[in-house]
Image (cartoon, one colour):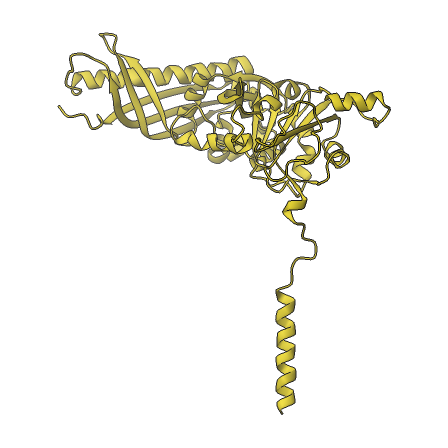
Length: 400
């Protein structure tokens, strides 16, 4: 029976070996070019591309877009960069490389002619699209390959730039990786209401398929520094860029949206001194009303926060009539911000990017089915009223 025991142990050992074998299709990360950022711009051929065209090494294509890929540290190309004057250097923590064409997939495959390591998009963090190319082409056209590619994860952040995407993906501080820098900035939304909820590829794909209008956070670049500044508006029907919201517009939109984000409201008291209120807790209720063919909404906002700055000299007691007056001033400013953004959405651009349609879909599903195909037009004609109530719950740690 001893031989039976030995055979049994051998079978068990062989079975265990099969379970701990490596993946047959694995590729070492050192042999790959992991790209973290993708930029899409209007066409501008690199010096190398112009030289290849001159030498007859071009291939059939139309120069519709220029794509920038940001290669991760440790995967920077060892040979000369594809673009003269790019960021590749011994001190740089990333490399931006560009090619021009009319197909993102074809552009990506042609990088194999310039690099000793193939591109891989498993860790793509951010896509930056320039305003100029978004005005010319539909967003579902520009991102069709990206949404189909299994290598790219759907939690990738999508941003807009009023300038060239390449500029946004280039930082003065070479120790910073722009793709990580941009995704990190989004996390500051709890401090300020001028930062939108992240628009990931998953959310964007849902907007595109639903035919809903939407916003993309705008990022600008100056002298190698990036900054979020307002947002771009995209039409649900054309999926093209049609206009912009300012930073103040985003503050007004933050009062309407159901997401609770940080923010401040600044006013001036009767003496002209600066007074600042910081929101700590917001509750927004949007109530739709349907009467025949008429659809209206009422937005009710209740905000609680702290009085964090008061420049009045000499100091006065921040309570009673003085505090009530400040609360009314803060509420009036919030209502002015709401009025400003609603005027732009309903009169200037005639699109709903404030999710009023989503509220109607949830609370009046039968009505929504009747109007969803031309909702932006219906929204632009809908009456919207609003009321903001502000309550100062703390005056900070000031002692009097």
